[in-house]
Length: 394
Image (cartoon, rainbow, N blue to C red; front, side):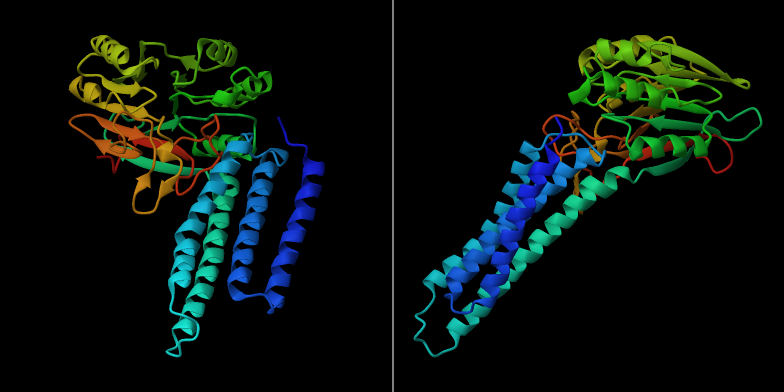
């Protein structure tokens, strides 16, 4: 449900104005004891930034950017800000409580005062940085679709030019936003020969929403390529959703089957594996690979990277997966926080070369649903374009 924007915004503006007026008054009123003034400044800062968090979240659906919940993300953001307050402000306050008496003449009280003021400045800077991360994560990065281009050895087109294979995964469509519109423009500009889709088309929160399923169809029906568009189901694609989304679309849904493509004198076998669970799916992959001739080039379409060991043992040539979103929110020097993969961070995103299987795990296009914030950080959405054969392939 969309927020009651005008009324809530009026309350936010009035309260926010009062908060910042209080900040100005506290800075101007030097008669207040320093300790109480600093405490009031910290409390008002938390309240002001909390209102800003609310405004950033509430504006997303009104601007047609994303359509997630408000309450839990706001609680999470408030918890992070309280954590920052605890880390920075409380230790300094404890030190000030235990410091030597103000009657000392050795300069320590003055030094302590400077340290406390510096702590307050750090608290403000940390909260400003958190706000900048929120703006980037919710308003900028989810719409910054990048194209990853790779050259791999494999069958080329009869002309000798590389075969251009484009992968899309984890669209998680809620509504058609500027991300989906830009996605279609970029896909058309890339002019792929073959498009492969590896699951999770509608957002899990909107699987029963007719508007979402209609918009998902609109996006998928605009995909086309000379050698076709092929898809497999993902972890949120229930039979109900699959029937409504894929019915009569120019997309071939591979449900535990092998589709043979003739590329000049060479054969490419698309192995489309529906997502049910690792145990069942590993067994089904073995059955499908038994149908692939040894001389054929095999491409596995499967939603998660969790069958990599089985695929490598069965000598799959190219394995295209998604599901992890690259973590969706990543930390500098660490990467993905959560991947929802059985391998954790081992195959969180990118290109992996085993022997003989090459696997690419895409960061995907959309955003996770449920109570999670609709955000990406250090993990922009991704189109994957692989050129098979031709000069420069390895």
